[in-house]
Image (cartoon, rainbow, N blue to C red; front, side):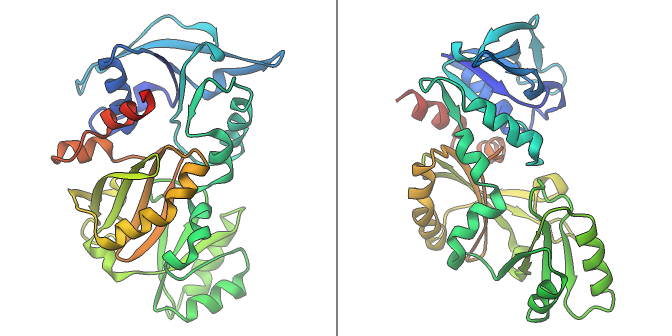
Length: 308
């Protein structure tokens, strides 16, 4: 199999925790031909997609973990599989490349499907399952957000298209500076924002459940660090292996058909207590941590299912 990975430069990744590297290491173990390219090295010309690629070799070493071959131009249609693994933000730069990937031959498997990635931002796809979510409002209107927040004791404000917990803040609805902080948050965001009721149970963790082709294959509980309400690993969340609860299984079953219908093959959902908060389709993470904590080798399952 010939695999192209649309990614941030490999030198910027963390060998110990990065899911992209876990998937690539497993592809290499299977003797697939592996190449990286940066999104900005993709060119649409004469109805074709040309791309400047570099052959990629990886080593499970914390220091010298990669080698790159000489860059050369190739036809992206010559590849069997393309992995979209560049990190958000999910902005027009990101979206533009999903449009370009639409021009690939149908025989080239793109994971995840670029049309569905474009139409399924993590904090918006989840709104199609509103009964599974905590109380939520998406708006740019100060008065609507204020009215919603007054009905909660605490609220969490989230940029719609961020990543890794960046920019998320916690506000108490009756705090003196609430109006000022909300105004500042709104002024810093061009798009509407997501506001959700704060779930105190997050102190016990925020589950990241990995699904392959609609089926849950591993679960990581991320416990917020001392003094922190966010549980993302990038802001100090502590990972621990977790089993799926009956509610987790119910949530996975509810979203399964949508994931399959949209060809969202590799997905990570976030669950706090009884509630689904996000459906991550751009660059799901957690695979290496799950394996290192004694859970399943999801990278193997990823490629096993593609090859079936």
